[in-house]
Amino acid sequence: MKNKMKSPLEYKKNTLHFDGQSLNLIAQKWQTPFYLYSKKTIEFYYNDFTLKAQEQGLDDILICYAIKANNNKDVLKLLRKLGSGADVVSGGELKLALKAGIHPSKIVFSGVGKTDEEIEMALKCHKNGIFSFNVESLEELADINRIAKKLNKVARVAFRLNPQVHAKTHRYIATGNKTHKFGILAEDILAGLKSKKYWSHSKLVGLSIHIGSQLTEMKATKEAIKELSDLALKINRPLEFLDLGGGLGIDYTEEERKELTSTAEYMKAIHEALDAFYYKKTDERPKIVFEPGRILVGKMGILISKVIRTKVSGGNHFTIIDAGMNDLIRPALYEAHHDIYPVMRKTKEISTDIVGPICESADCFGSAMKLPPMKNGDFVVIDNAGAYGHTMSSTYNERQRVKEVLL
Ligand SMILES: *Cc1c(COP(=O)(O)O)cnc(C)c1O
Image (tube, rainbow, N blue to C red):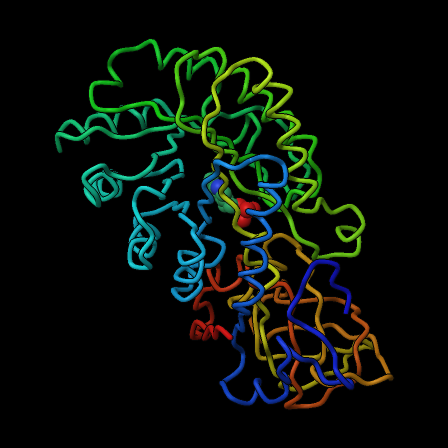
């Protein structure tokens, strides 16, 4: 196995096991393809995240799990039991979080396009509304204030700062630069604070950032924390929290295995930056909010698929499996790499393209992969599929959305 981070997968006598159980047996129980999730692995990553924060002296924290990474109801209930809140980006996600029993006082609402209906839903779900609307424009703040006034409520809001940093990640998942649609520039936040029109029914409770996803190095994160700290000091009014967003990456590729930032290193970098740019300059100690998605659920999930047939054409070898880009779109969307393992390992290997049945050339999970020759009915596992797998799936080509099983 190539995983560096903790994973539920392990070969025992050439048969792939998941949390100690033979995948050959598990794969036969459900119609393929299907997602398989490890409860133990989610618990490990959640507890590890909190522990590594504590080890850096970050005691007063709130984890708001980013539901868009994986919104399975059993996963949400498990995370709620472990103490997690939620970061939601739509009314639908807000409903899921509430249904899973996550208390509104632990829910933050992000996103540039919150509609009037969604804002109203969030304000009404509890007498105090939600923990925070992370607002992404002054125009949105005006809308929130107007709706809160209509409902005779006070909205708790945090500005999402656009810290103007370049996160080193795929350009589709970087979010912290001036050209991106996310967040508000510091100068506009300061102007917004001075203007009375926003604040009749809104209260500033925090500041937030989120600079991108699948981050493997901390330079941009530290820069962003500096910008956030500078702004917090300039505002000079008590804040309940600083929300540092999510984005910590996992080890999909060999390169990432070499340069990956571990959770311990991430917390250390965060603590160092907060210390240098904020704690040394003020006695305020606001709560630190995190919005992790991928790091909590990425490693706990796999997609199990079955070989439909193989095909040889013009010297190219294809292994056609029953999972497609509609089930897991990351390779097609971001040219993302996922390790693929045969459930039954053999010593002989060939070079083959692992492709799905969808009528798109992008429907390819890996080119020239070294795998044992496989035949119809053999099972394969696509690894590291717990985050942005099922949640991004679709019914393209009139296919059913696949089942999710929590072990
Ligand atoms: C997507 C998102 C996250 C989670 O990102 P990960 O890379 O999965 O940790 C956190 N906060 C916001 C605002 C997001 O949009």
